[in-house]
Each structure stands twice: as C-alpha cells, then as structure tokens.
Image (tube, rainbow, N blue to C red; front, side, top):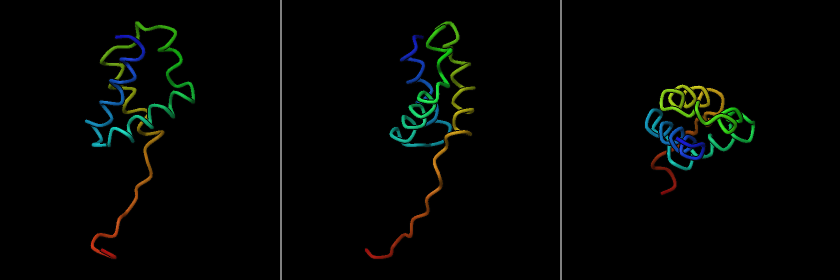
Length: 77
C-alpha cells in the first residue's frame, strides 16, 4: 500500500482495536505524523504493510492516546 493508504489503515485500526471515533483516530495519526513517526514510511513504502500498520497502531496509541474524560450522565438535562 502507498503512504496515504498506510496512514488510513493505521487510523482504521485505531478505531477497530481501541473503539475510537474516526476523528480521534485521525488526530492521533496526525500528531504522530507531525512528530515524524512515519517519516521512514514516507521514504520507503515497502514497509507500509498490514503487519506493520498493526504494530504502529498499537505503538502510537500508547504514545498519543487521548486523555480519559468522564461525563456526568443525567445531570443538567
């Protein structure tokens, strides 16, 4: 897969593995990309494999996971 498809796959895996919203998963991928996490992938698309996407999804989730937010249900409604 090419670089863009790879990033899409990593975001999709984040939604599937960690039940994140698309917006949150894309945000995590964008933050990792901004920190040059995927620079090697951009230079060498041969490492853009399904197996690597699964490893990278788990790795970037650990580093960029969203903070847990608690909601008070039923109050003020």
